[in-house]
Length: 197
Image (tube, rainbow, N blue to C red; front, side, top):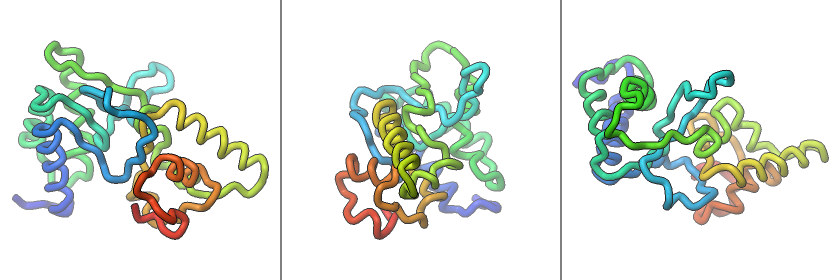
């Protein structure tokens, strides 16, 4: 297979993600911090964005997916991958495949699953997340940090760190991310020195 302009490891990673999901029922990116119990999630996928007017999803994200083993939707994802593979468009073979397949299936019977709102799995999008790594500079910003930590902790199962964007950003003590990771990450030590989770 010619990997085209997308590195081969990315295409293989996309295919591996789908195979793992089909065979084992769960796929999670490694840049996820859990904030709540996920054991009750079943046949679940998260919306990354919604239309502000219609409140319907505009993009689903495949960084977090929980499905029954051999769920029929997983076969649809694998079929879509094999029939529409494009080695030259970033995201076509994995992140966007989920939205394409689910949009095409609509409410077709036999595909029981739940689409969770962005706040459940992706409470902060990739554009805004760098701000969460910065410590507050004054009382007003400290109050904002406390408010955001409460909101995310109350309404989200997890937070996606968007590592491609944040991997070189230092987690500053007192920041939203420092608070969330300190309270929820069981393997993180000395998080202010580096952000290589």
